[in-house]
Every structure is written in structure tokens, then in C-alpha cells.
Image (cartoon, rainbow, N blue to C red; front, side, top):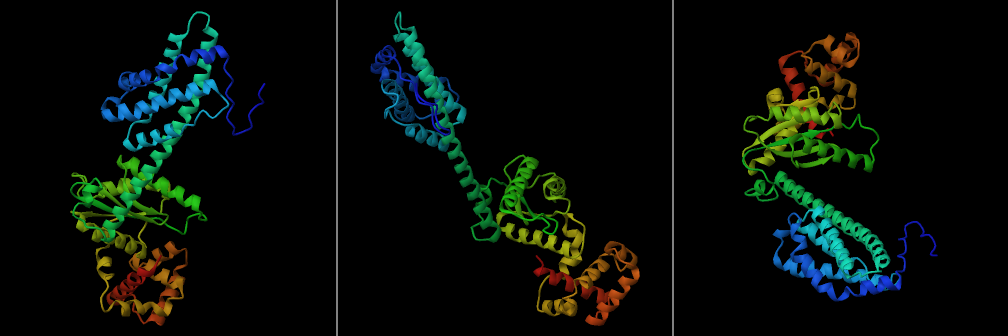
Length: 412
């Protein structure tokens, strides 16, 4: 009696009786006939098989069947010997995955081959060979289980590799489109987008995130991508990391400004990224407009953060003045430097930002910051003393807002 296999080892094949070996040997002369029959007749019933090129059926498929039949017969003769391995099955499985044959069709072809071999054994069995036939069926089923496992494993690994390569190619193309490093003429068509598109910038807050780890980061990105794909019912083009990123989606005719799409994405993404996510959506009429749209969307989010606007969907109309004030020119550095005297006082910077957002209402500012109104007054007086800015005046308020926005360029 053979001993039980160790964990991870295959159970040894039992040694067939001389009668079973003799029955199997009578089928050896039929190997070529059976292989041709399967490749040209039996497999034709399988979905998608008829569309395969004739040379694939007559050469690759027939050769794989012959290999399987001979492997079975050799193992019957010498179950513990060197009958061969499943390398050809694995090679063909990888090829079928690359060609796009469905896995169920591939597995059914192997099951059909096992059934045809069983029919051949049954037709060869004579009176009194019932026991030998049962031995061979047991042997066949055990071998078929191993073949199916090897084929399915190889197919899925190859399919996963191909999918990863496909996604990376699309990401590389999108990355090049966003930064302007690839010619834009046909890029959208290659990415599967026709006509106008929407460029979305997504920002995820760092400060409320749990301690980062590679596993948690990858999981977050995968969940974000899954939500995007489910929401838009397609594989969304996205360049995402744990801080957010950009995505490119077709523009719907009945949603020309992208507001409806942006609101739906915000609602769904909050389920994964939390309530503090921010989104901006900007339209692009053609591929050449995508880089500028991406920069604009990112600027809208940055400015909305700098102004203290609540998280959610941000639109250009919400920050028109702030967007204009944040544009850089020869005066930008001087304006930003107006707040240098309080650069090391984040409490004063935050008080100024919230006070401007609350339209100079000291009580609203105090409530937002959790302070007493007198504390707000003291801080504003200190800001005026250190910077020289007359915050209550229209000019001082505009300068302070512009300085905050220009300094926000360096904010993470």
C-alpha cells in the first residue's frame, strides 16, 4: 500500500491491472483518428470554436489532443514513471487566453476530449473487461482533474497578466495625454473616447487618513477604481494614487457641463474616500485641450481648499474671483510675501482664511474655529500689526485673499 501523500504533494496514481493496461494499449492505434475527429467534429459544438482558423484546429488543437491521449496511455503503462508533464497544455492555455477564447470553452474542450476517450475505451472493451474499464475510468478522471487544474491556473494567470498590461498601456497613454508628451491627434480614439470628454480631478484628504501602508494604499486605489467603473458602467480611464488623481470620461450629451456626472461621482466616491473628498470637472472639446483642462480642474480644487470651501464638487463659477486672483505674474511673489510675517503662525493664517470665507463675520468665524469672538478680534489685530494689511478694507481684503491663494501653490 502506498503511503499517504505529504501536504502539497500529488496523490500517486494507482497501478492499473494488466487487463486495464491491455485494454488501453488497444486504443493506441486510434490516437491520430481520435485527435482529428475531436479537432474537426466534436469540438465544433463548443461556443466560439467554429470561428477558430482552420490551421489552429488542424495543427495546434489536434496536436494538443494527441499529446493528451498519449500522455494518458503512457501513464497507464507506467503510472509512477516519466510519462510526461502538462507543459503543452499550459502553453496552449496561455495562447488561448491571449487570443481571447473564453475559459469555459477551453475547459469544455478538455472535458469533451476526456469523454471521447472514454467512448473509445468503452467501444474497445469486450465481455469480461468491465473491471478493467472501471479502472481506466478512475484513472482518466483523476488525470482529467489535474489537467483542468493546470489549464485553468495558466489561463487565469495569463489573462491577469494581459489585463494588467492592457491597463498599464492605457494609463501610460492617459499619462502622456495629460502631460502633453504624446501626440493628441488620435489619443482619445485609442482610449475609446469619441467626441468631447470630461477631465475630473479628485483630491483625497491626507490628514484624516489612518496610518498609511502599502497594502492599505493599494486597497484604497483598487476600491476607488471599482467605484468609478461601477458608477459609469465601464472601465474608467484613471491615474489614481492615495492623494487622488485625474480621470477621463466621455461627456454625455444631456450633461454638457458635467455637473450631474460630478455630483454622482462625488456621492459614490464618498463611500470609499470619506466625506472630505473634493472633485472638479472641466470639459475638453478635443485631445489637445485635455492637458489644460486637467490643470484647470486641479487649480479649482486647490483654490477651493485654500479658500476653506466645504468638500464636495467644485465648479469654476464657485471660485471665479479667487481663480483670477491666483494667476501668477510678475507681482505674484510680492503679494504672497505679504503674509511672510505670520508664516510661522498657522493659527493666524487659519483665522485669516476662515474670516475671509465668512465674509468678515467675527461671530461666524469664531463658531467655525471654536473660539470666543474676542479671540478672533485679537488675532485679526495681530495680523494687521504684523503684516500691515488693513483686513476690513476692500483693498486689504483682496490683497490678503490673493496672498493666501498664491501661497497655496506650495500647500500639499
